[in-house]
Amino acid sequence: MIEARSLILHTATRFLLPLQLLFSLFLLLRGHNEPGGGFIAGLVAAGAICLYLFAFDIERTRELIRFSPHDLFGVGLFLACLSGVPALLLGYPYFTALWWRPEFPFFGEVALSTPLLFDIGVYLTVIGSVLAIVLALAEAEE
Image 1: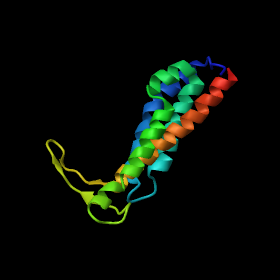
Image 2: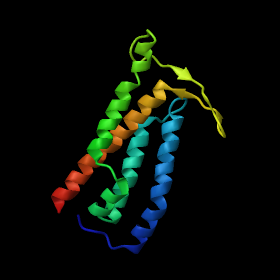
Image 3: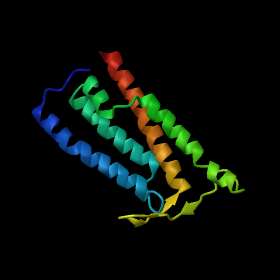
Image 4: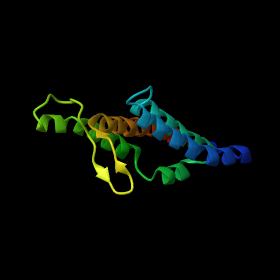
């Protein structure tokens, strides 16, 4: 891939990447009650990493993500499928939504659910699949 040598693009990317990743987490967590969720949050996160790829190069992008996109894809699929198991263990149909509210020190009561686990799985699957495609295309271009 032709590396952009633009100071403006480099500076803007360093500023926008954390904001886009934070916004993707917001979309992920908001998705249970309002529009959003794992799919669109994963696309926003993958878009942020693609912006980094355009501003810098493949090697620096791989250092940024630290994991193989295929590993992210696999872990995401595993978590999405795993989210249905607690319902089976309790005698409910697979993918029946379950919620529990454990208390943590310093945080208090936190709402956890199997739909959240499913959304996190979808989030990682989307990031992994988009990055696998984009990085393969960028490497083929070189």
